[in-house]
Amino acid sequence: MDPTSNASNASNASNASNASNASNTSNAGPEYDLLVKCAVLGDTGVGKSSLLAHHLQGCLAATPAGTVGLEFNTRLVTAKSGRTVKFQVWDTSGDEKYRQVLTSFLRDAQVIIIVFDMSCTKSFKNLGYWFDFLPRQNGKTVFVLVGNKSDLPCAIYEHDAEQFAMIHDAIFISTSAVTGQNVSKIFDIAAAQILKTKPMSFASQPNTITAKQNCYLLGCCKIL
Image (cartoon, rainbow, N blue to C red):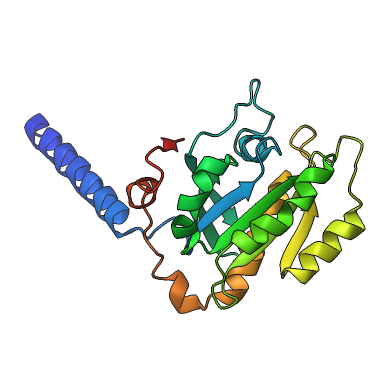
């Protein structure tokens, strides 16, 4: 058999395989069924960034630092139904100087997570401000109330937090960014709830939300 012919056949086979792989890649759909904008709010120091770091890295950040303006990252969560939700997570600063511009930023958020410190009475009392501050979207927004630092001596009873959440149409969960208690459940709960409010047709045409479209409001944004 002609060696030149063998080389030519091998080359053609390789090219065909590469073309097939490229075609499969280009025809592949998105890695998710639903794209969701999610904002994380709460007083400074309640552990918002630590919760997100634990969820992303599986452990508490060695030197957790306060958020300046906004930090952005993503989460993929597969619900029990088998559908996958991609969360575009915006970790916001609790600093008062950023709160005015957050109103416009939050207007199109589909999931809002409000975090307070279970060991700090003041952060629980300030929840009233945060819920009054939030825009309401005709019941379409999913609210998750997170009581963080449950590993510390609690100043707030879970029953009181659950009652507060019920009054404000939110779902309550207690967590610890130190031990990892219930950290992953925050986005599991959010995914389950948002999928209840969105028909299948919506999932096939996910919204496109970019960092540039939102961070101009605050003038600063850290993309993780």
